[in-house]
Image 1 (cartoon, rainbow, N blue to C red):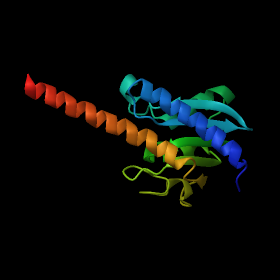
Image 2 (image 1 turned 45 degrees about the vertical axis):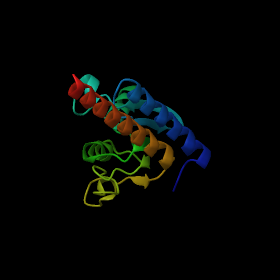
Image 3 (image 1 turned 30 degrees about the vertical axis):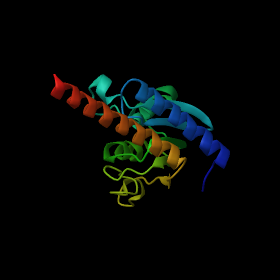
Image 4 (image 1 turned 180 degrees about the horizontal axis):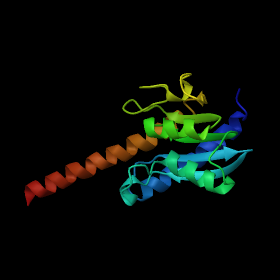
Length: 167
């Protein structure tokens, strides 16, 4: 059962979108996440793989790590993750291991989504923990961030190739 009103869900997802915009501002894929406990944000993260050169620097992983430090506990049992893109296998594994109560995500990930698209890690009853899943929160806004980012990236690459060809 959802513990938040539609307004609260949208508020937290907008906070995740703000994190995604931070990633985009530093040239990272625009994915953002916030972790909420008792209606307070206790963890934030945005993609930092390129800037950190660490494979695990996904938004979800960074938000989980910040929350662990803040509450001084690896268990995040009564916590809720809001993330702009469906979590991957690594992040889904961390979500299960940290025992999050629920995950709200924006856009589905057809190439790497491990919540509902390619796999169903968070709801797999063979694992020691399952998570409530709420997909499609502000889906259009979340998807547009990614679409726009990759469109711009392709345009830049095309312009660079054209420039190199003319030199």
